[in-house]
Image (cartoon, rainbow, N blue to C red; front, side, top):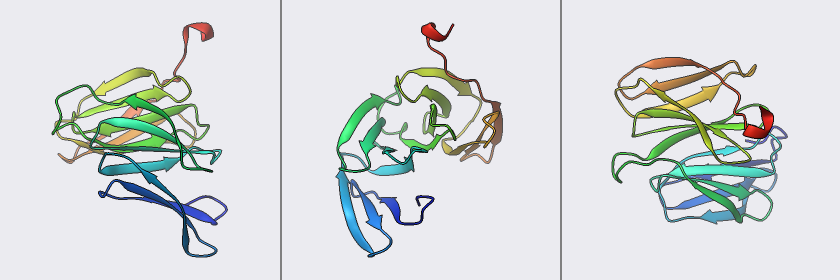
Length: 161
């Protein structure tokens, strides 16, 4: 749900994400992909949506017209056990955190789509990730019941060093 409570997005296993208008209770835009969607999040400036699912891709969408902007490979292992189950965007929109069936937590730079850090520790699929509002920690929850708290490290490019 957008902070202005005028719009929300739903994702489902039929390969469709829908942006809904809460004022009219009607569909505004349909997003289609060849995947069973598992997670969808708004970028903090609400100009883009980010989705993921069984295709192991992280897809950026324009929230205004529903067009795919960028698609990145979100997991590297064999199909079947490595769906990406969950996404989170940090409060400033500079990073994406993902988790999935490969039991890994990944931290991506939002703009460049590069994976900067990989967290290894879960013994089951990662079901949920979140970034604290102060961007100091990442919390992940696994299917095995494990809850991990990771230090957030700001993604940096060579130009930043």
